[in-house]
Image (cartoon, rainbow, N blue to C red; front, top):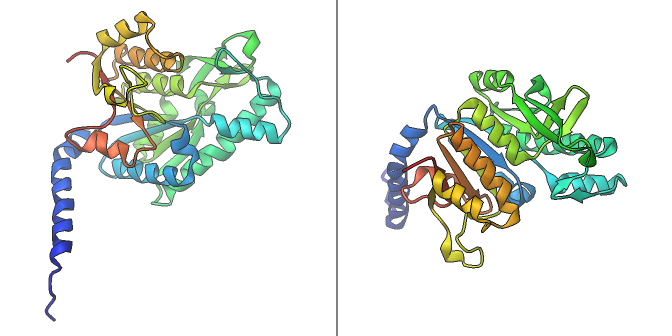
Length: 293
């Protein structure tokens, strides 16, 4: 039976093929590399956006990336606290976490958000395993300060459990809860991801949030910085020219580079296929930080 070719469809298919050809060298470079991705914000909390990000993560896994996903879930925690009549309090940007709040943190992050992410990834096969940073004493913590309660500072990262999950061919999905000798701790997800990237000597640390990257002027959308060296980062941090919310993220990124992580990327997870655009195209999309040119 003869089949007539649709010229418009052939043209569209040729364009898709050209994209795959462009991606080929990047796929080759990524195969076998370790990426730690911190995932949060609207890109995770919006169901449709989350499903699209998950597709990109699965594709990266299927082309051979050793993928570690670290997540928070601040809005989910606050919503559940209000539902359970647990007071929501913040001090200096940190959630005040007493014993009651810590119980809610674990319910929201480990019981809800973590399982949601694992379920969505596993819709494409037996790909993901969910844990918290308390499992296997992965994130060993001490209290940051008495005023904050059970907010933890990571003192040590034990990679044994995560490495075993990776070696078994799965994506570890890690909730940002830490282990302490006196119980569980609430851990900042940005810092948890950076700590894991350093401990694994990851090739890339990726912050996937709601902003496009680092701007020279956040009021000017045309001032996005595509790449910055560690020296430039340290100069910017010391200058006091950063917005307060960006300071801890930048500091953790600089520290990761100092400790051997090869590249750090800030990407907007609400931009369709931002992960693929950054890692599988020649132009990229977010801000990449590197130790030196």
